[in-house]
Image (tube, helix red, strand yellow):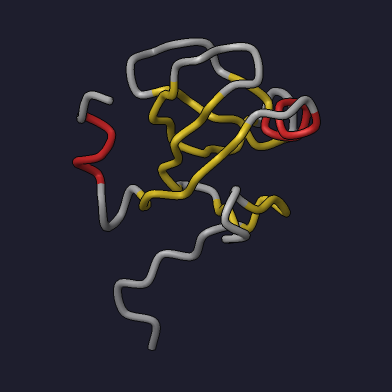
Length: 91
């Protein structure tokens, strides 16, 4: 019996500390061309058939594969099941 377990899909990517990044993780994102760090949720985009980061304050949504290749840095800080409050915090 799995009870209340939520399965999370591995994106195939790792954060700056070598931690696996999963769908529904909450990440700090430092974009290669910006000095600002944002908090975002990792999610699947059916339109583009790929993982995207969805910033907490409705900023621009980015494709994870293309931004990782251009030097964007990710750091997993939690997930929506255990740390939903992180999505409403200010950086």
